[in-house]
Length: 312
Ligand code: UVW
Image 1 (tube, helix red, strand yellow):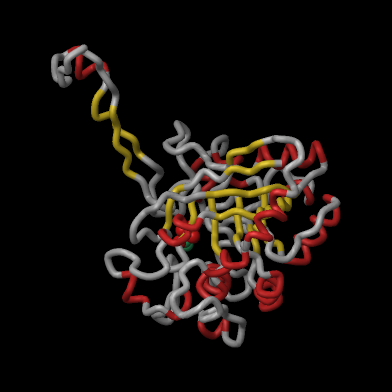
Image 2: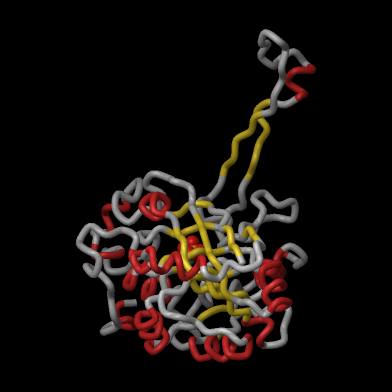
């Protein structure tokens, strides 16, 4: 990874030696108002996938989807195991076991690293047992609000869903934006649709996970420089890991996690449901909007579930 990313820009120290939210610092009050200016119709969209979906949850191989268990329900009361209260109300309770990266989620900036340093140069040993630095908590405390723009790469290529391992770069994003009649602007929250997550529920799971390679952004030095110059605050996609799984040239796995998240502090949001929003954008021709998201405040978390809300 070091060799691949040698000489590329870093934002370490740019927002001070204690910074933990990286490129979200670009989302000033003026940027919030730039997003608000996109709200014209009163339409709202929620972008979280269902947790514990009956057809399974799309996850990075080795993780598991959310599992929810009833702790109390009518059955407990029928067999006399439910607690009795004056007035005799009954109730249902449940618990959930979930990977914090196993559903629609924000990654903490300390989620992925190489060379023993996480975002902003913090020692990777600060991740032991829980993230003491650059956890998801500061992102959750801050919230994410700004102007979002959706690039529908699948629609641009005339496909319902991009192929396994199909790549695209910043030139493709800009060409798609032009075809959509919109522009990716500095400080945008960049949403990219590949069709992958929407397709998951109807696909054979063996086929989906076989030779696991997602479609997505592919690493190049120019692409990293473009993200740096555009000062993109947040990358949001309908894939599990926001990039083509392995760089086709070198075989290096998730180089953009390192180049964008670890080095530039670009915040990643993954496994996002973008189909309904994309349909609406294609119908009304408006591809920009106010994007808002508040991941859960998980102390020490390397990620946290979220249900982003978009307003047009
Ligand atoms: C990895 O950790 C590889 O992916 P994600 O960012 O999806 O959690």
